Image (cartoon, rainbow, N blue to C red):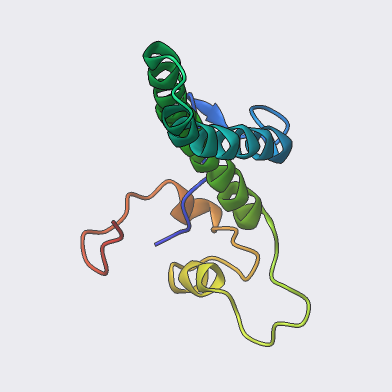
Amino acid sequence: MTSPGPIQYKGEELQAERGPGLGCFRFQLVVLAIFVVLTPLSVVWKWPDWLSAALLFAVILLLLVAGQTIIFLLRLVAADRRARRRPLRSGTKTVGELEDEAAGGDAEGRMPADDAAAPPDDEGPVRQ
């Protein structure tokens, strides 16, 4: 079985230049940390109830946004790792290289032209 192709994002190949970056994620985490500390303190300091509730909803919203950002950044890391070659100091082959050789490709992950169009057989390990 060959390695899966490039990671897709909204129907296109995922590009590191697009989307939120690590700086955006760090900013979200700083704001989230401030709101997480400020929300219970607003109750202790007897701020108006509507302000405490607004802070609580802001924390929930920031958790959602930061969670989606980290998922996107993890997909970028996965896409980058698939594009990289084997580390120079590695004496052994990577799992992807072993899978490619078992499928009949060469060490660089290229499949022979006649095997590229052939449908995969139903025998062998199933990847989920």
